[in-house]
Length: 344
Image 1 (cartoon, rainbow, N blue to C red):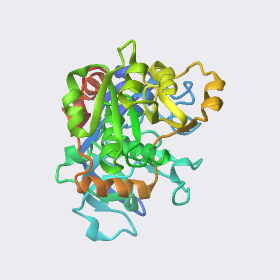
Image 2 (image 1 turned 45 degrees about the vertical axis):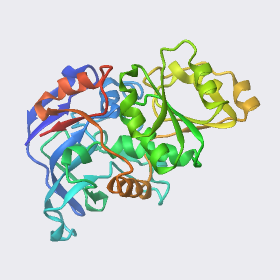
Image 3 (image 1 turned 180 degrees about the horizontal axis):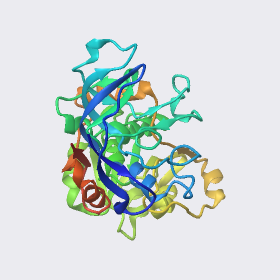
């Protein structure tokens, strides 16, 4: 099969197109012919070593074992099964839950042995991938490309929304609202939970699109009076902030939160370290959450919301598999709106 491997930490030149034997499904596994694979920050940060040192850069402390095929947002068709798997699974069009874990129901994502496809296992930048049969779900939409827009970003956003326990009518600020997780945060908070969503982006050219997806107001982070603008528009401080930016908007996030407000972060594209005055936390009684991925029950709930039309896929552009370098380069550029998807 054709595949794209990461051969070491570094720039996009560490992505190599190769011809290698297709994997064979083991006991309890299926072989999936990959039809689409969405791109995430996760595989780019893994390649760049952004999760840790050159020996600790995967989801597990031992780091990534190269070469590794990245890619976690996978849809495809089951074409073969391993031992113990019913042959009737052949032909199913599936979306893959993105990690394995021995954690109990509801705690799968925080188990010490959580292992991620595309980091600890070979992933979807390939024509075929093997995966446990019980982690393959029926596709929520007819389109392979559109169904591949949800897995990691959608699950992460769903879990973030669950953590802050949104109530209808609350005002929620969403940063990075034109990116993968941010777009789903807008939709889930507004359309699933009935919140009043304030979206923060760089360029206001996407304001109409974000309002169509559920945002009531859209702000640019370039505004020198952003915090004041948000508080004025809401008639007071907001209930919660769903953040994927990190340092660049951290002070603003804490400034706009009400006493007893909640802050949940799942990314740090605008800076991985920050200055924090602890007095802000305890004097305002702020609750902080760190968040990534989620549980299998949340994944299933997300798929049901997609099928019900409450969450829509937003795809910016597709690339053929052998243009993975170009796809990851484009992913990091500003101005895109929605997911980037590789198509074998």
